[in-house]
Image (cartoon, rainbow, N blue to C red):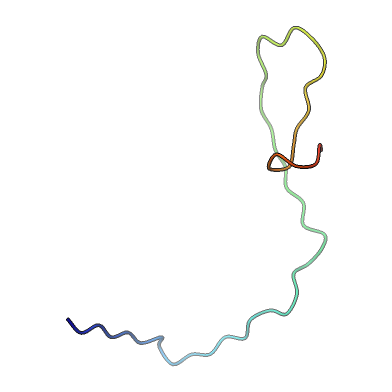
Amino acid sequence: MLLSACGGGVSNPVPTSLPTDLTYTIGGTVLGLTSSGLALQNNGGDAL
């Protein structure tokens, strides 16, 4: 089997850094919560 591919010959530079001021909006509804103590976590890490 022979595989071949072509990237199209266009070279796009890779950005050297990402902006640090990215923000995201999240939303949702919690039903049936009868006590306090709800916390959001960043992928199981830091509490937001």
